Amino acid sequence: MNTTRVVRTFVIAVAVSGAVVTAAAAAWHLDLTDSYPRADQVLSEPPDTIRLWFNQVPELSLSAISLEGASGRIDMGKPQATDDPKSFKAEVLEQIAAGSYQVIWRAAGSDGHAIRGRYSFEVRSVAGSEQ
Image 1 (cartoon, rainbow, N blue to C red):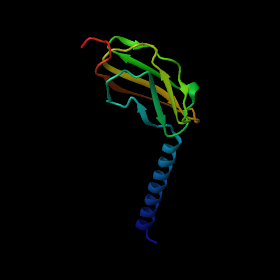
Image 2 (image 1 turned 135 degrees about the vertical axis):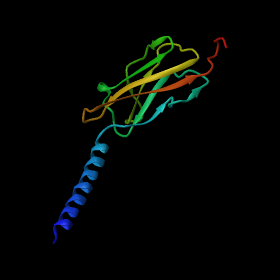
Image 3 (image 1 turned 30 degrees about the horizontal axis):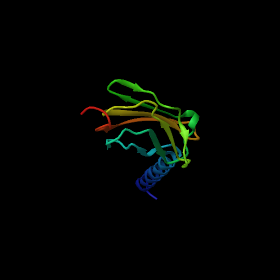
Image 4 (image 1 turned 60 degrees about the vertical axis):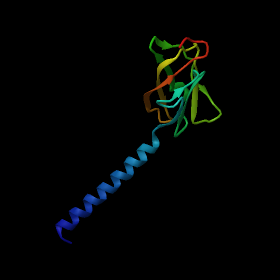
């Protein structure tokens, strides 16, 4: 076998094994798969809960959801389990007005690796509020 062929075979083997390891590592970590409200969603009524779904079961003790609007942070309940083990929710404890809001969240899977994220949604009109 010539040296070029040996080097080429080695480089291909390293590349393939690196791709396999990267794919396996990605499968081990928690990823957000869905939310309510969804990112950039426009609602006609304010949500009473924020709910997040993941690709694996999140550890509630390592999870948090906060909500911020133009007037600052909105009071939220503690993360709670739902009927789907791969999701959790938190209650919105304040009445919120029409406007833009940002959900800030943190979660970790069984490996303890925490991930964080944020997204926005909008409430267009709220019953009983002035337009």
